[in-house]
Structure formats: C-alpha cells, structure tokens
Amino acid sequence: MTDYRRARLAGGTFFFTVNLAIRKDNDLLVRHVDLLRHSIRAVQQQHPFDIVAAVILPEHLHMIWRLPREDADFSTRWRLVKGSFSRGLPKGEQCSPSRIAKGERGIWQRRYWEHRIRDDEDLRRHVEYIHYNPVKHGHVPRPIDWPYSSFHRYVRDGIYQANWAADDGIRRWEKG
Image 1: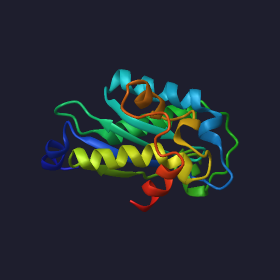
Image 2: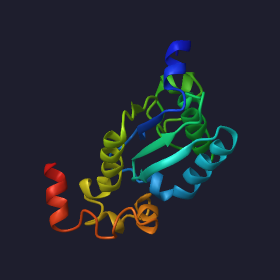
Image 3: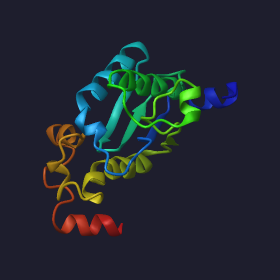
Image 4: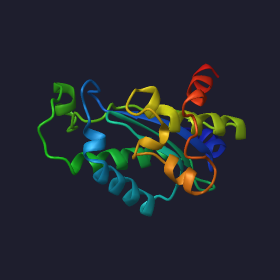
C-alpha cells in the first residue's frame, strides 16, 4: 500500500467479508466461535480497533471495524486473526499443493472483501446488511434469533428493537 493511500485510509471505518476456503456444508466458524472470538480479542490487544458491527455465519463473516487515527493497517489485523484461528484448530483440512508449498492451511480464502464506509448512510446500510444476513441465508427467521451477531448489543443499547426486520419488516427490507 502506498504511503498516500495508507494516510488517506488511516482512522477509517471499513466493512469486511471474510470467507472460509471451503464454504459448502461447512460450519467451522460457528462450531469454533469461541476460538474465533479469542483470536479477534488477542489481535485487538496488540493492534487496537473497534468492532462497530459483526455477524459470524457458519462459513463466512462480516464485520465493520473502526481503526485508530493514523492507522490503516487492517491487512495485518486480518492476517493475525486468520492465523491465530487456524493455529488453534486441529489439522486435517483439505489443502492444495500451492498452499502446502507456502506453509498455509486450507481454512480461509486468501483474500477478503473490504469497503471503506463513506458516510453515516453508508454505515447504516452496512450495519443493517450485517444484522439481516443470518435471515438472508435462511439460518433464522429473525435477526434476534442468531446468537453470533452484534445485533444483540444494538438491542441492548436501544439502537434496535428486538423485532427489527421481523414479519413485514423483512419483506420491506429485502426490497429496499
């Protein structure tokens, strides 16, 4: 990353999608959710960032991170999170020859998708996307029913009502 781009992104807020290498019929992230949470907290202690919103699904996750001022290094943070989580799992996953040659495990996709949050409206839309995602993927009928989501914190803090996007709200939200 160039110095100009790093300076421009420093202190930003970012939306991420991070996927497992094998997504079909894989529940690794929720099966080992405590290890994933531990990995994230350990990285936060060494490289601080705030988690604005998050959802952990069986085979992928979405998060919004707010980085400290003068810091744009989300790639190191994700590398450390993925590495810590991978090291905490027993070996045995399928691994391609190229990954073996690079000393990698076959757990995560190498890349992730990131988007810089531009303004309050962009943030609102991405937070809603995160919280609605378990419903979108058919895991639960309402966001409140998914245990691995910051939605519960938003309800506790009075930002959402527990029935947000339930019943008629779901159909309206999917169209919008």
